[in-house]
Image 1 (cartoon, rainbow, N blue to C red):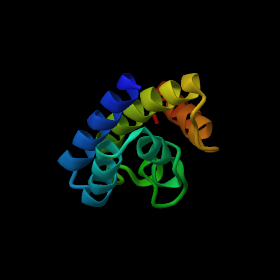
Image 2 (image 1 turned 135 degrees about the vertical axis):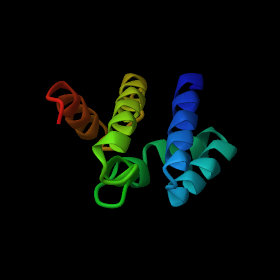
Image 3 (image 1 turned 120 degrees about the vertical axis):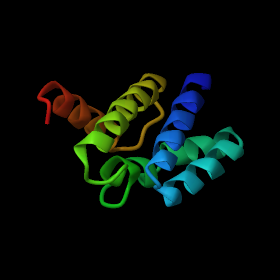
Image 4 (image 1 turned 45 degrees about the vertical axis):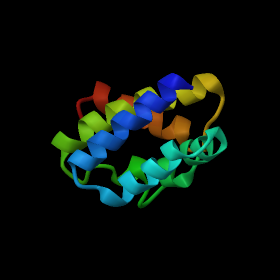
Amino acid sequence: MARVRALLKQLREMLEKNQEHRFVRDIDAALAGNDTTLWAFLTSNELWGGTGSIADQGCGPSRDTRRPLEQLMVELGREQIALERINPRTQTWTSVFEKWHAQDI
């Protein structure tokens, strides 16, 4: 759980740096809550969903700002998969980000 919290804090810092304030507020609320609140966010569509989610929208359209976010999401996704605490889209996003990185997309 400590590793997941640390990755989520890194994600928060990255989003704050890129002025994605709505996402930062959501992560702050998750980190301030108990484990149930944290896992609810980590398995949410807000994080791993489709249009408008952090996985989809993240740090905007620039590849330069998205690439580090995608790499961090892969780390977070792999941790969640190992712990078997995932959203139905966690595996898909994690695989897509890994593929994009391998193909330098």
